[in-house]
Length: 108
Image 1 (cartoon, rainbow, N blue to C red):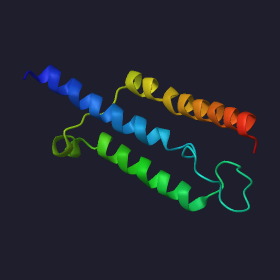
Image 2: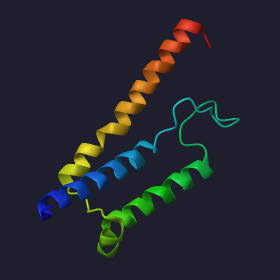
Image 3: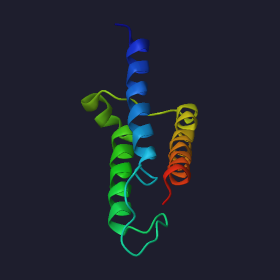
Image 4: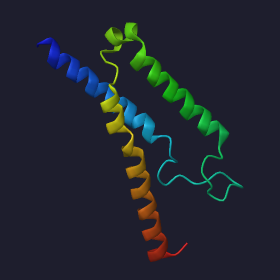
């Protein structure tokens, strides 16, 4: 296996990890809103702290060179990060459309 292919595989792994974590910044699909929040986003401090810690840990793994060898990943380039950013919004939008459809069909 040549070095170029290995680097691409490592970058792909890092992109997959960051995409999954960035997706967690929006409320999980189908999860009930905390009591007293009326479904308003960003009102659960414990959930937000957990998400922040997870994202910080992922960035620590991806951007600490010593950990690249240990975990077999590589830092993402700006282009790769730009490709990852739209995914949470696409997933959030699709989930909101599904919820709107379910409300209109079954009432809520």
